Image (cartoon, rainbow, N blue to C red; front, side, top):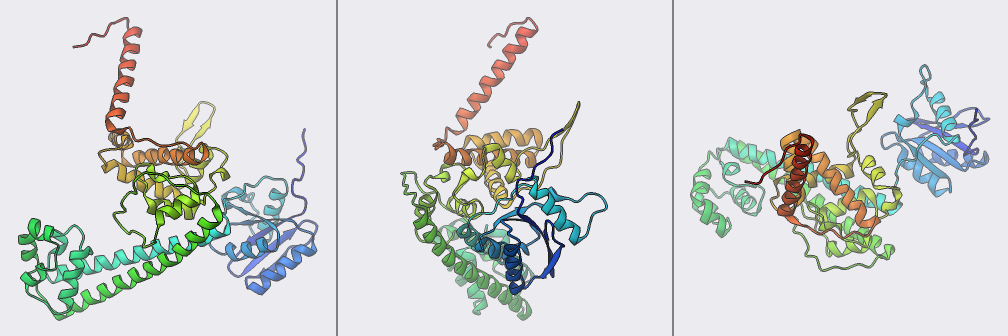
Length: 434
């Protein structure tokens, strides 16, 4: 019988809480430290005294981030561990026993290292995630504006595709400034909108302009503009990080592919496309459903080194896009997989847009699968295909060429013909074309 050997003899395990952290070093009694910065520095000094080189800690909320940064800066090899990988044995559940169990498992190499990107990617991640939060808050105030207008019986939400578009906001600002004449309010719309929907807009602008509803509209408008300003500040800081990242990556790359338009929430960052291509040394926006905005968010989640995942299967599994497997003997159940990561959600959003697209072959694949299995499975499967293509662009230098829906449908037709010929041979029958 083989005996497990220690891979990391000079290791420590840390269990992190909101008020205290517990540290286990082999041969020493467990010590606890408070969660102040000075206490973390004291903890680092204690680990150096014990000649510790490797540290394992659980990913607990956001509490781990500061301690991780301090230990990493002090030269320790820090491993962040998924809590599900280090579940305790039955009956062992205290903070002291938790850190001892982490240390014991880690010393024998039984814990997997969670993905933690380099420092500049973590900086970029903070700004992009903050931007998404502000956009979500802004969308709440759009709903409040729509509610206030409905209370006044101004039916702009029914006649405009976007109440917060350029024409919609111009009319709202005029209403808040005191304008009530529908003809004058209509003048704030674009020419095409007046031509196509002018009569309906005039009818929609005849409202019940009560003082309390105007006040509610003003509050919602001010909140919306505040968060748009916050988004703009996030874009400024994101642009600085992208320029720094671009200059340090040394991956000069240009191509002749046209830049895809960004329909919603376009970042106000100069030369965004060139910066991203310089960071990656490739152009994954050639993939259907992905724009520079998608690539910016993926860069903040994944960085620019795809080889951190040894294979494409590891990559899609980490994203949470791989199908689950639960097999034992002849039993083969569908297991409930972990939810998609933030990067996985970005691929799923791109896949969702492909279902409505009439040009790419992947869109036809998604619609065909949706008819058979439902939208949830179709979106996940299409997102997985996109993620695999994304991986291969960087790993193999693959260039994606869109063949279109006709090519995909021809491929499906040939597969069906081959299947029919196979069945006909099995039944000793012959196919005849009509």
